[in-house]
Length: 95
Image (cartoon, rainbow, N blue to C red; front, top):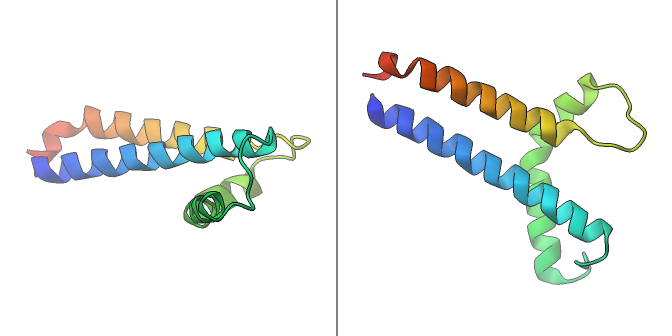
């Protein structure tokens, strides 16, 4: 059962990495450091969007309009941290 705990923690870490990568890449695109017309940038950007939109979509529907400010990644990260805390506090159940 310890391996199940480790796998869950690994999946949460990968999810955090994707959210951070999407966040940083969105800023780089908006400040025109990255160009979405480049094939590699487009592939990575569209892949991250397709991967994270099922997570962000329901969160965006729950949040009120913030005038162009997207808080969905922040709420998703807080949710991941909450899940990690719950898993760590209940790690004895995995033994």
